[in-house]
Image (cartoon, helix red, strand yellow):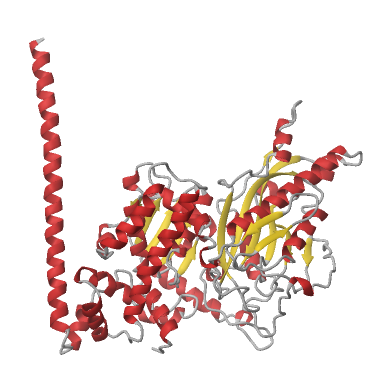
Length: 625
């Protein structure tokens, strides 16, 4: 017993000593960090005071802190040849990638002409290469096409009912509202070889705006709807028909879940003025695709019953995501009612009759009802729909600039600790590459687009891919900053991308969710901004502790807008400080010394040299640089 008692006593002492050692080590590390921070502040102050007289321009230019990732002076989709010339140390894969892009841009089929204003004509039959698909992922400023048909208001409609073509696509007259541009059903077709090979395609399309949705966009939609591919299974036949009933009656989600996700593509042309200038994406640079994935019945040519995945996707310039989600749910409800009525009737025709058409007449009428509804505007009470189901009622917010905030930010805020969120935002403002990783496509796409939405009034000018499909992983090699989401990637693969900050949303250990190389972490400048941090955390703390969620309380929804509002006020202060200033090294130092605290200089200096900031400054100051 004496030996056991001594052993227990020694064990307790060892634990206490180990705990004390850990505390002392933490204190030591904090002192080192504080010492380094003080040195940085002193050095920054000395630098600014010495350079206020602008006496040594070359020394100042060489001393400015540069971005760790080469700051792009041009966009990949615009000038790949210039990027090759100006970046001689790119790796072989990056050089090869950009050379292919340059060759692609010289394709005569893709060169705009006076007779063919579209970048990619709709009648092009060849499939897109990967580089062509990547070009569609990056938004670029667009000019309105004066020759495109003007979209009419609802009361200008001719009243004609659209007719289905043999391929189940619809030709819709131009002249409808701006609330959406097109609708698609994507999945596995009836060909047995396609089902077995899991080859997805567009099964049905209803396009209102052919100028914005080109053949190039249509070609890339299937891969983005099924980023990890699609897999069919044979229908399980039993006496209770539980599998059949589950497919027929359980495909209308009662509330938002993992089956709803988003992706974006660059639109080809603008076809008129947006309905309201306060809406996000007023320049119509990108198309939002709001998607719901379901399981559905399919009979192949041999009469074999299959359960196949399908995606209902709605394309729109306007990120009124909750409205579009409710609309897609209404289409699924109409399909369920149609099939229920078919089963109850004597001429159902078995399963073949239930799956004969991808979109029934009532679904087409619902699409038309939405197309002819009033365009979104502040405080509008929108109500539309066919008589067979309850109408869709949507109250537009008074401030349209945040119409997508709650939908996107609830999963984002509830997935990350405040410190991680704030640090990632600073990294993105300094044009670091950030890639989110999650098997949940709903959370993944919301986090990517949520981060981008919180940059307003600034715009992310580089690559932005909410969901990177397996077929387009080359986008991670692009030598420009990117914000992206990827469903899955191994740890060994992540090690190959040292300039990317990884956000592992499925990681249970919160301290390991945000990962990056030591060098990239040290290069992210952090301003003190104690008041901003305090205000943000006061609104953010309600999201911490319970894991991610899709919906929230009224207070949580209000706090999403508060956080965005606080960031906008801070961004506006920075913009006002530089209004009317041409950013040269001398002017930058002068503005820093006169208008910002010393401990914010490193961040402001790095941010002021980004394309994000310079684009905004040029926009508001009309400065040609």
